[in-house]
Image (cartoon, rainbow, N blue to C red; front, top):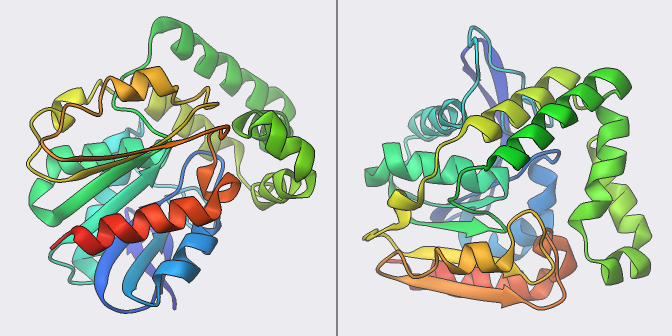
Length: 267
């Protein structure tokens, strides 16, 4: 079911698939909710899956009247969506930037979560080198446009093996992002660049936390994320061998089963 609601003078698009225990899947940078289609198709037989397009992605408009968008602004938007749908508690799982939003949500609205998860994502903030890379990326986007930027950036998110075997799937993800505005991608870069370290959200968390880590992931490296997995009181840790940053596509069946097992254990 495709739905919209109005938030901060922007139309926010989301889908709801299935019925049952509510679960929200948040996509990452340069993607939209379609990145989760294979997971939603698998899980909707047992659960109610919320698939929002983060403001500025897919069919969702860019937030208005915000001088400098922060990750918490996107978390507040997800809070408004849940209020709009009268959802008292949910399991929230975020991929990459969606994980940063999930952490911000867990920090601000922990009472609304039954559990949460980081899929190819990290609680660490960014060092100076990464911040400079973000600024350079924004200059590239400004100069060449969002499509040219994503055409160069997205292949780096996949393992060499996957790119060689399934070049058409990499191209599919690039094409899904061809309508991104420059402003949306630049706002995401600045929001990610300025986000604080949120390892304190994980440390001692009473909520179960789900981790998916790719051994070939250069965005959320294995060693970085492993340092965080011991922080929550209860952690579900899954390592995908020879997988980079897009496990939902690179190892679909494994990720689907990991998600199903996790969600089924949350009361």
